[in-house]
Image 1 (cartoon, rainbow, N blue to C red):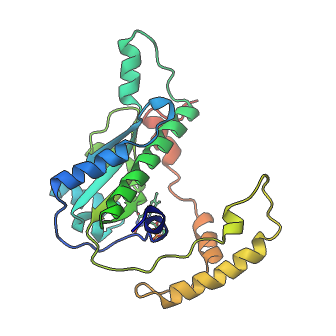
Image 2: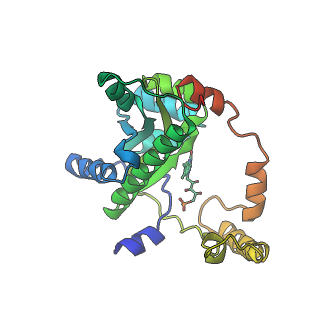
Image 3: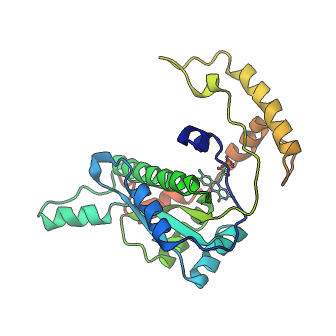
Length: 244
Ligand SMILES: Cc1cc2nc3c(=O)[nH]c(=O)nc-3n(C[C@H](O)[C@H](O)[C@H](O)COP(=O)(O)O)c2cc1C
């Protein structure tokens, strides 16, 4: 499959075969992720591979009991990490300016880019992945379990393994809404979204698993009207981020 085809066929996998991933292949996938671009070359990401069965179980529990966290052959936690760069700063007798919002953005973006390259690398060799944002349901406990130092935080987890299901690809927003030219022109967005709502209703009604009767805009209304993880600011500040 060529890369364009591979990317457009992405779907999250939540059921995995028990087959292990060959060590050499796994290392190549990690190295491919690490080769990503990095803001100011800070390389502000650390990946933690969870092989310990008790830690997997604990992470599954705190992340809403999602079975695939325990069942996937591999589970990775992608951490935004400024700790070693701050250490370099001190080593060279300069005082790091800590807690800047810009640093938080840099570390989070670097981490997301590494993760997505890792995901594509994995999918390119026939593996499936699922991001797990739910490890931030209890980010204090996640950080404690992984013994994270200050100036790091767990952004999300990722299950990786050989797919044992073949879910349908989820339709994305119409291109006109997602991709604009020169300015943010949105006069047709409402109409386009209602057409998309129809397409999503159809998708959810007809997919092979977890059918439901919900449009995309209804889904957004449900998600964005809830105060989701309101402890996040306190958590990030406690880890040395977002102080200024
Ligand atoms: C940052 C992030 C966190 C996510 N967290 C979860 C999660 O905790 N559990 C889960 O089952 N899926 C999770 N997902 C997967 C999304 O639900 C999925 O990507 C989205 O519904 C689109 O479906 P698709 O990936 O099959 O195209 C997450 C995705 C992202 C990008």
